[in-house]
Length: 75
Image 1 (spheres, rainbow, N blue to C red):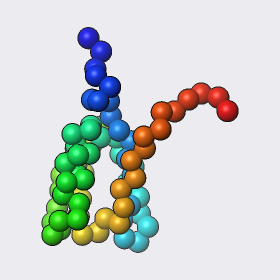
Image 2: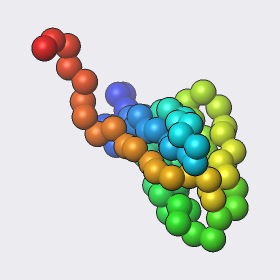
Image 3: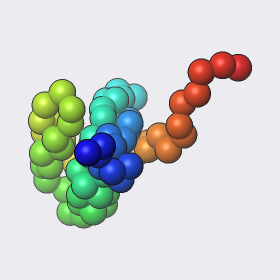
């Protein structure tokens, strides 16, 4: 049975102070959890990605970019 569209990994980019960017592919649930902890009092968060778990210092994150566009072949 094919996976539901909602469980398809989402491409994100986490931008940090100083200009560093962390690209990752995460589940919609992992993205929702990350969004819920951003803007709180800080601390650390374990972000589970397709490549492994990344521990993020929430006080250092400047932005979160979520790619919603479906990629197509062609011009």
